[in-house]
Length: 234
Image (cartoon, rainbow, N blue to C red; front, side, top):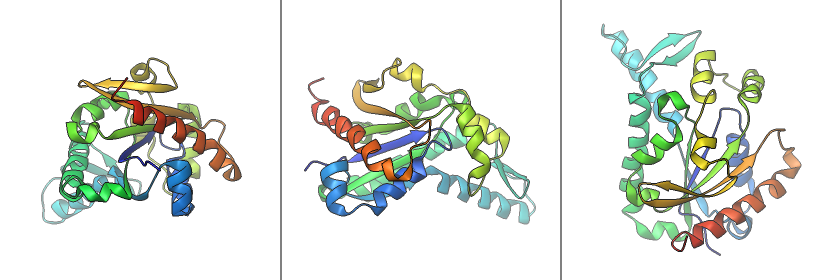
């Protein structure tokens, strides 16, 4: 049964990305491969690299230098206003995937590399992220977008284990370019740098019940795999 090589998982904060990953992780290998088209999966979440930069700022500050990437905010951190740091995080995806996975082609026989992130329009949106990905990575990508409104993202933010500061929630979950990028379609191909990137949008508002996740995602991923396999002929 075919599996995705690179699966991009994106959507506003609170759209259900963590629930989706937990659902995939709790599924047996056979179910993942046969019904979800996901193998043993490796999750790359750019928030982990962003958090490292916040901690590096603490070190800079502790030795008497100015913070480079963030400011402290209500017991946590607030990233700076420049989109450069967020572009750097896409560069980290490129670096890690080239170094650890593309250099070992056989890994794709059994593994799916999952890239997780959220982006707002003010930082270039999802289009900018796709444009910054290495071409070889992009050519092997499929995109599962989990859609919720900004109102829903705001409603769910206080329920998160680590709520985002209001500024960050607006930055990553306010105005975004997904509907513009997809031309309002719920599935098809994104035209990025001459590459046809297959995508499916899953509506997660209202929030799906935990016992309905299998039915909710299986059909979407099966449709995405159809597009993924047909992308060279599209």
